[in-house]
Amino acid sequence: MPPDHDAVARMFGLDGRVAIVTGASSGLGAAVARTLAAAGARVGVVARRRDRLAGLAAEIGGLAVPCDLGEPERVRAVVTAVAEGLGPPEILVNAAGGMFTTERAESEPLDAVRRTVDLNLLAPFLLAQDAFPHMRDAGRGAIVNIASISGRVGVPGIPQASYAASKAALSGLTAELAVQWARHSIRVNTVAPGFFRSEITAPLYASGRAAEYLRRNTPLPKEGEADDVAGAVLWLAGDAGSYVTGQTIVVDGGWTAR
Ligand SMILES: NC(=O)c1ccc[n+]([C@@H]2O[C@H](COP(=O)([O-])OP(=O)(O)OC[C@H]3O[C@@H](n4cnc5c(N)ncnc54)[C@H](OP(=O)(O)O)[C@@H]3O)[C@@H](O)[C@H]2O)c1
Image (cartoon, rainbow, N blue to C red):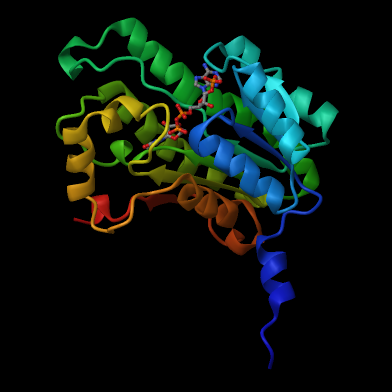
């Protein structure tokens, strides 16, 4: 039998589906938005920087939805804006995230801890709540959260207690939502990246010593690229991942396998 290229295209195709991607103004989120659009989805792109969003939306034929996701009351406007502008969302990728302190755990300021939880955990939860009725009505949905290997293992020399806690909590939320919403064929998964060059890790890679430490401790010889994360998200967002739910998939070049 000849290879069935159409079957593979169907497994990874997202024609006719509306997706929301947060954190799409840079780094991993931007790569995910481009990949989902290339697979055929109409994508609502969310972050704070309007110019970046407008440029990306024009490039991929999507919709820019500027929002400060650190403000819970503003988060509530996002899903409605996408549903009105593009149609009911069936895919939600929570890639926006940040770190608000580099202090060691014993000295993390309370305000930084709260901001971390609001952006990395509360915003994805609220967006999932708001996307739920649309996915339930469609009879299917895929939510992919972007966590971190820091939610799974401590990283020597790079203090990040509240960040790690917020990302581990995202994996817990993922399993619980997956079980609660499975009856509606809504799948919920998390991708946990290792280390990738982006704005959030720029200070790390700027230091030659830190960059060498990352390279030395990553088994695969190549450096991770944003598309390595986007590929995992595409699998989980589309029909190729249709029997996978509640999982945290690690994309780290083998960092946590050591
Ligand atoms: N790079 C890595 O090595 C790595 C490793 C593990 C996990 N991650 C996770 O991967 C995700 C993407 O990170 P990245 O590496 O691509 O970093 P990045 O380039 O700094 O991207 C972060 C994104 O989040 C958005 N964002 C930050 N604060 C926001 C807010 N208050 N409201 C709305 N959007 C906000 C930023 O957009 P605006 O500034 O325009 O708002 C930006 O689009 C994050 O969740 C991060 O924790 C990254």
